[in-house]
Image (cartoon, rainbow, N blue to C red):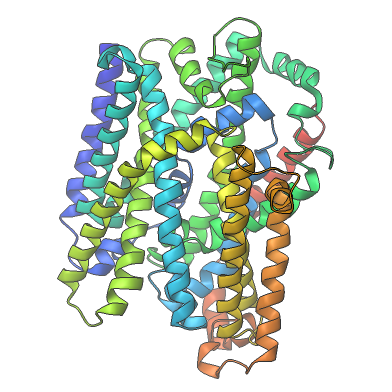
Length: 557
């Protein structure tokens, strides 16, 4: 890092501070703090959705996965089509209901018990997976790039991690969701620009796209988009079953993402923002996954050196830091480090604010109803500070867990694959059928979460050598996680439907306007007025790009 690099990073923080100061001055009510006053336009919503999704674990983890597995993870990065589903199917229900959170929506549709289950599970998952994984991934880059500044890689790791978490926590506490979404507009541009430079300089050093295709051809199925069903890690059928289940949960029902659409100034902005986010989501394959493949190819040709483990295997999560350190010219490193900080801080700020919203609205306000607005904003800020502290405390444990896995991104996908199925089942069935009732939803969520956590525990024990895969429990732990995700989804659906049919139908007030069959004619008419040919055109562009990328990469090896 040169003086120019540091000046670029300093400029980024200066602009960030200005946005936070402007946002903090406008926070007066819970709507201001948790939903940015419900006055956000579509462009900011789409950029915020994209920046919230692309954390440092994405940049670092996807590059590592690209080096190790080629295009296998691309299926999760082509979920732009699911954002189209969010825009046209889910957003109208959420926006009309006027809720602050997804657990609150479940209470509207079912009952308070469903709300409690989703709120507690979401909070726990955020702290012990997303927060810690995001911080750990960012710290890996600090360890490589700033070792000389702080004297040692480990010192750079901890100083970078703690300083970034504290800075992000401060601006999230002060400015609320408004500070989060408007800083993410800046962060989206910086993130895309910095990552594009990695791809361009990497391809230039390698010898072009044709050279990368040749390396992919030599790698064969190991780098293919579609793997045979005998593949132990990425069987194509398991991937195609699991990927949409996880995608619908993440993009259409998770507070972390959906909260941005709830902050829109109108239903049209909410829908169009989701579509704009879908367009941005098309590109991570090229700017995050492909650079990892380039890094592997450059390492094989001796043009860069990526650290390896004792068996000679590349340390996948060190691919991106090595590309930045060895490939980029002076000055551009600062831009890419700024992009990494953007990814880290945008994801963390989104997580902090979502956690604060869930705790304040779904737990504190339920326990102490009728509290004044000022008190609820103060509780939200305290909750944010607590999440920051818990995230920091979990980093050492996350460090050990991540280093024992194939990579950060694979670890995160495993956890999400076991959490998502029951939530996806309950939301889809709840919107699709008025006959689904609260008992079915609660049983589906409860049993599904228990089964998912049992599988996650057994799988971790098998991977760490604590459980013999030859035993019954070991066989469950060793069973492919993607197939299990699909199996868990169908079990959850069966429980929700079965229990609902065996018990009484929900009362009219629990389904009015909250299922496809109970939307009034006036609501349908009002919804129709909120979209025109531009929304349809953007939808066609997003779906066309996804289809084109799938077709191209299906035959490129």
